[in-house]
Image (tube, rainbow, N blue to C red; front, top):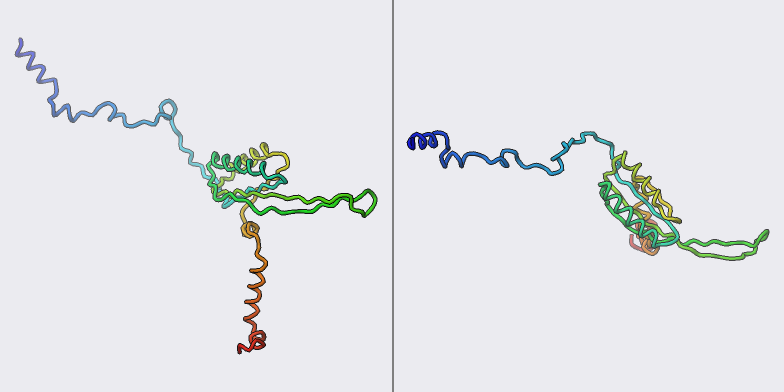
Length: 189
């Protein structure tokens, strides 16, 4: 009886090498994403056209609200998975307003004020997401701040920098030195 039991055990129980070859249940099942445990993940294969580069320009008379809203635009752009290429300030423009006395040309009051400007440059903006992005920004736009959203152009890059008048004058002088008449008058030829 004892022999028959040991024979049965040897026949049906695997040896140590056979146990080593068996995979565990975790290895058989594989690694699972916890998000797909209860619901399957469906890949979105739709493709939308994208804008090349978008400029979100913020302008206003008071700098702190513009600065805070620029930070908000940056955060929302990241949530929409847009690539924020650059975020920068543009030099303030000073304007002059004159208030006249009623029915005359006599100046009653004169005011100087500054217009501050911030630009957030975005890349990889999908067309359907841009409308939602702009609506969200317009909903939260502070009082006194104007927002312009448009595609990036070369003039936007030139608008960013302050022109150096003295440098431009020297460049014009150098260009004029290439003129044969000027070179002859200077005695160079």
